[in-house]
Length: 228
Image (cartoon, rainbow, N blue to C red; front, side, top):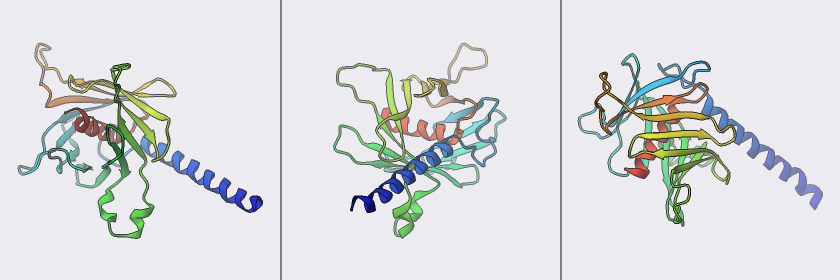
């Protein structure tokens, strides 16, 4: 019987490994948007406005350094169980869903595209999150500057990214755990004269070469849910 089970077990492990590699590749893969996606040579500078362009909605508006609309969120109100990040044309880039757990805090699952279209279909059952994000809770206040961890896939236990800093102060770094390199940063937006700030509603998102700007913005949305 062991001989029959071994090939199946190996196949399952291989499939899971391939799935995780696909998830990681998508996180780094460039978006098909006007921002040019993840650049391999230059940083992407985005301005995030904590306001929807639609009068009846709460959300986010994201523009690039030339003033072009890049991302938007229109379904953001209170603490929704699902948030959809869209490009300028309204195409879904990432969907995040709150996942209830028995721990002190919930996890957030991140899906490619719009996952809400698959509620009543068999394809939704096969759709897997590319990662999940967990708020850091330390009762002993150790590593209190760590805000959250990002885990690849849906079941891995070792984080691939850590987010440090203070979202309340709009000063955060997203760090690759393996290379220790900063892949994206949240910074306050300063006025041209350098003597004034735009406050907490308008801030910068700087995405370093090779990292997906859409995924970085998705992490901003989750930080806002966790710490606002």
